[in-house]
Image: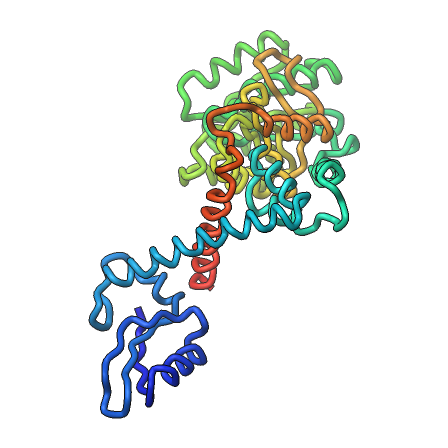
Length: 378
């Protein structure tokens, strides 16, 4: 922590100088008499909040006092945010209704606050919610018909987290492609060298569909194999699934150099944080996304939120294990309506009326921490 000593004729002059030099949120840590008047020890709040836990302070008072000051500041901000929420609800109920609807449906605070801030003035609550629905529909990125991968053909690799449904989704795509172009024009590549039985599972699908199956144990073998498959209308590569935090999850990006386009397979049944992590790691550089396990997602708002913010086109949606019946072209109105309807579900996790002020306070405290983290990272 960087604490500074200020000497002034009196406390009023000292405080004025502290505000000028350290800002209005500066914290006075200690005062004592001085031959010239008064001595004040102060620190900017940003420096105070950034102090690592257990770090020895520069002056008396100790880290315990500093931590207590930070805690009290957080409590005060939390309570004030709760008051502000109640005031906003009375002053601008339509805007608050938009935020509540998005939060309840699983959308994140960044998107919720952005859309609430853009709500046209003068709308009542019903009109505001209709506006919200239309905005979500317009902003959900869908892959156009002209970019449909089954019609265009090419070589695609399905990448994603463990258990996201890559292999089953690949089989659904292969079945559709075989119907459209003939089984002889479709090839599958088993490139998952980590999961036991991965190639055997794909063999079953290939035999049922009548398409060819090839095994690539590593990138070098895949590089030699792809030119041999160039005559096929569609080549689908099944890759290994990793946790987004696993360094091996970056291996999929090496496919770009081989001319293989990546499709990010994201499970809608995950928590919002897991969806965001998967989108960040597997969606970066992908040409499109396939949203799977919608049947396991009573509140798919988090998945739509991530798609909107990352602007990754949605190519297909999937829910269920049937091949190829449970694969569909996405419909923005259907997905948005389903997400908003999910916010109306009566679950133990749904916020009640008395919970919203507390929720607003927690959100404000989180935004403060993120702002301070960004400020010090910069």
